[in-house]
Length: 360
Image (cartoon, rainbow, N blue to C red; front, side, top):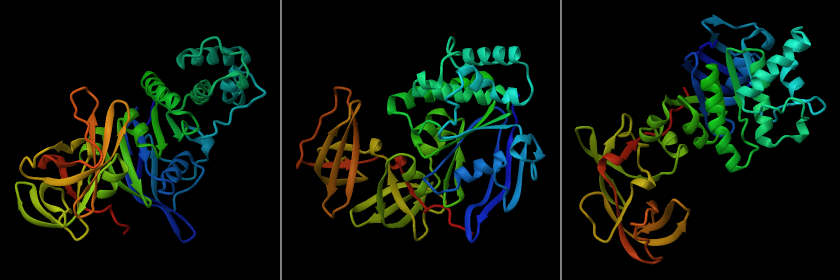
């Protein structure tokens, strides 16, 4: 059983500091929803408000359609997994998992049966009698998830639970978490500053900055069609030009910069004084000739081999740094440092975007 969560014009103040600023979002029952943003953007404060450890300064939070103002954490249908997992080192795995059930007065036989069931769910059969110190980092993560699921929450709240793991294990646990969420159908709200995690696991992502939600959409939409410069730059890498919007037609605009004239998609608000042109490195094409519009001559700098792709850094004649990513598929020509080439892009791949949503 899962529940949806609604944040209706929710703000949270700590003295004169506003940590969360008029956030409106509805998380669907059974959805894997991630709040993504840099440290201090308000995402963990949202999690703590949903769990009941902090009350909103204004606005309403509903879980399963019910206003939860005044309800303590143990009265809400939520379970929270912290960064440090907070497992009990002197208890075997099964007792860690069943701890919440013991508090509820469930018998030892029923607790053990539930722990064994959940260990199979998180792919740790046979680990029930091990001590926490005998487990790997990834196994501890699964035990923490099983313990949270033991009390049958309608909403699982996860505060950067993979941050302490190494890259390979994080990537493995992303898939594990996603699979567990789909098997259980429980609503997951996940907090992270890692855009790779958010994009890989989530049904939808809410990108935050300075306490405000900048964009809420599915991962492809967030990456391919960011609504502003903050989202564009925070979610992946970007090449950026500053200039002035000229002629507009059919959703595209000319864009004059000190590095040349370009044409790209014009996003609402992009024609304002703070609009900039953004192009992702994988959409930059290296060529020996200009190839038509949206082309700029560059001098090649560093060339970094990164396995499945090659990152090429370059500089325009007027001093702007640019980056292109070339697939390592055997057909790519890797340029030499100091060489002269052109970087160009399709107008549909560039976007003229406004700055981030400003505070009210």
